Image 1 (cartoon, rainbow, N blue to C red):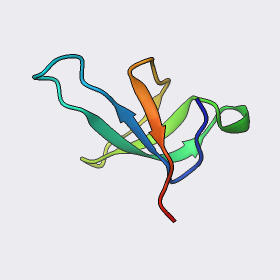
Image 2: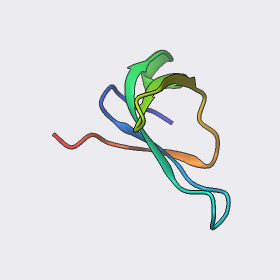
Image 3: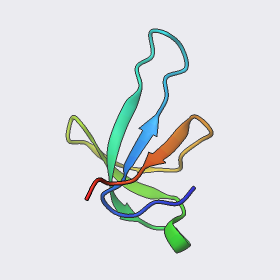
Image 4: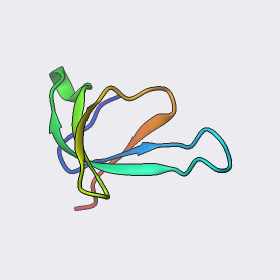
Length: 62
């Protein structure tokens, strides 16, 4: 997985009642765009994320 600042990290829900979550990538800490990523969730919280297999990156729209 590779990302750059401004891309979106999408974490898919594990069941019908578990919603899909999206966050903005505000910092890339791995080499060459690799995780971990510092992300800002829609509620304003920030956290360091090591994405799992249920995640993917959406390129920022420029």
